[in-house]
Image 1 (cartoon, one colour):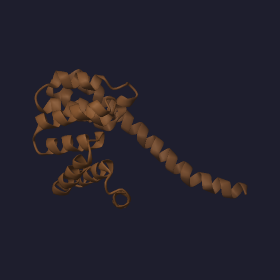
Image 2: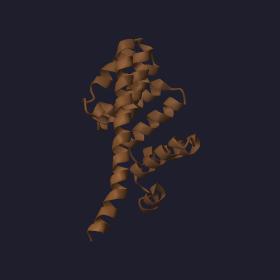
Image 3: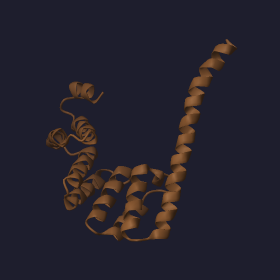
Image 4: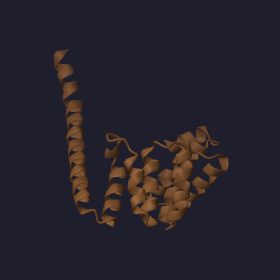
Length: 169
């Protein structure tokens, strides 16, 4: 799908940033960096800054990742991905208390995002806040369990609803 979008909009910095993000998820660092370079050359976007931060983290440069996260924050401060990147970069440079402060900016319902929860648990472990870590781990397990139940229910409904509709016809 991304390649189709790239063919349709070859000068879109967002499409190149998404392509870089996909390459990074696949573990293809060189391809990710090339797509990222192209995205940043065409214009700065939140997605491009996020990918640049992820590349920096994977390259062992958390200070650079923090810089990219702050740039992304200027575009979209309420993004969970921005918060997670910034908190992880702060954690990796040894500023765990600040990372917790950044994580606290997420709204309660949005803080169930797996990426945010994972960063929060790493920060709590670094700060040796064991009771808080245990609570967060319990919450993460509950979120995972409820998402599985919802997913299985949707699959069941997807299978049962057409059968019921056919029977009613």
